[in-house]
Length: 327
Image (tube, rainbow, N blue to C red; front, side, top):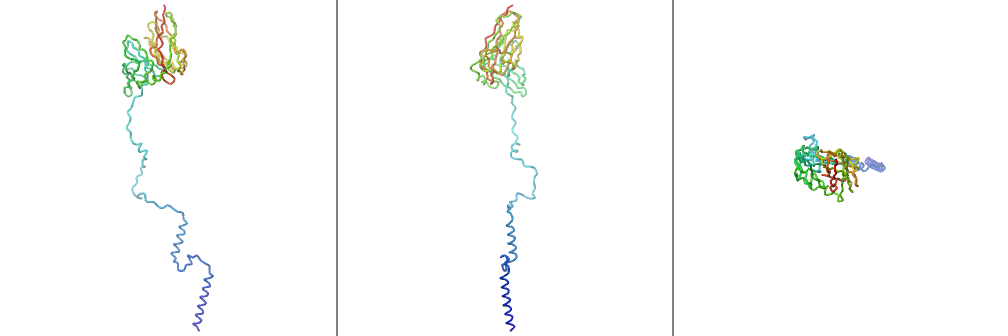
């Protein structure tokens, strides 16, 4: 009888347990799985948490020894390294000769060469040093030899067409050519580019003058090409004429005009202006005083006409001027 009651009690307890399980609230599958290990549950929760974090780059390979020796001197960039290479210094060189030949004067004291620089005129003899540091070492029939004194270097200015043949002392002057001489090359670029149209010059003055009475002679110029500068040399009969004054004509009015009179019978003139064409225009005017009766002569011994672009303007030498000096 007791045994029957125990069996009936166990059956009722089993029915109540089954009913409780059926009506109990459902839990997540990960928790309600029978027999799931606690470690597996914790691993699954950790994986879910890590998956929600943002991704990060993996740690690369080590760049060097962490506690190794280190130099604090900054590395020299490649460009600076190339600049640091010491180049071989270039040897010094003399500047080009800044002068041009305008003529030659032969006198009792020797030969002198007339040089021009812009509108300035220089009369130079051997051994004389100019303002640019160039010393005229020697004069020959083919070249002028200069020494650049700051460096002691020698340069030559070729003489093309000038005929500096050192004539006999009886001759007082040597006429100038139509072209200019380049200070750095034998073939003058300025002469090569000379105007083919050319220019004409003529003297204008009285044919007869009284001894002791001053008179004027004008040098007139006609040129279709604008004239920028006009360095030149005049020679006159110093036994019968005395040069009193020289002034610029209308062609160079307002420009630069310089002159120097040599009592032995030469006048060196440097003239420059704005550069314009001329039609029988006065380029310069010379005032003379007759000092002895007879026939006096005035002529152009050297002349360089330069255009506005620096080229040489071809020209025909003007006929010499003659005046009869009466008592």
